[in-house]
Length: 304
Image 1 (cartoon, rainbow, N blue to C red):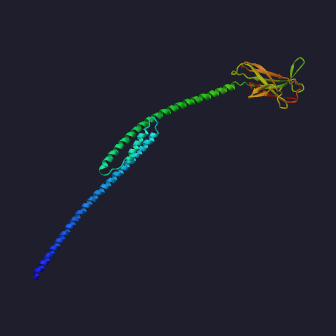
Image 2 (image 1 turned 90 degrees about the horizontal axis):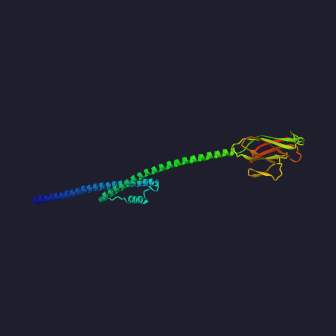
Image 3 (image 1 turned 30 degrees about the vertical axis):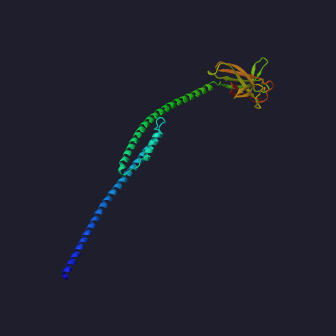
């Protein structure tokens, strides 16, 4: 009887163990199912996260490229003339659209891409418009440069003509200055019969004789010309009455004697006599001859 009870007890334990094992196996199966299900979900989430990051980074990259294009467009726009520029409002509108371009994940990613594509197309249209305006502006600059070059050529010709005119005027001015040469001053004395002879004696000198040759000049006007003579005595002062002057270098200058000559543009020999009115002192006498306010020559003699 005891053996029967013992056999039944062992059989019951076996059943319990089998049931426990079955439960454990079922639990392990559930756990394995949950593990693989969660692993698949994690993989899916990781994949979606990677995709979202990639799409967001691509949108950021595209946004930066659009901003660079807009900056380039603004730079080009600033180089255009005011008549050709794209308006500031259009540029501001594009900037606002770029600033508002944001990534929308999940089901809205398609809308973000569509918005990006639309903005790309709009930006391309503006860049094409800018390229056309730039080409037109380059044409205007080329025309302006050609016009400036032509204007500079005309100015250069005008300046050259002005210089040639000045040179010609200077030549005429120089040509209109009368000149003389062969200056000679001597002491002169006269016999009772009026015969003239030269002398170097201060005591014998009655007059100073100043001779010179006025050169030919076809530029100056014909007519009466006045020659002014300044006689500088041994004291190097001009012998003058003090009241008789003529203009030279814009100043009133005293002179000793003057004489009018009739000039017809041809070479003419001329002599002028001057009597001191009192005895000549010994020493060097220097004369300066002026014609039309210009010094035309000098000469000197020594009276003993």
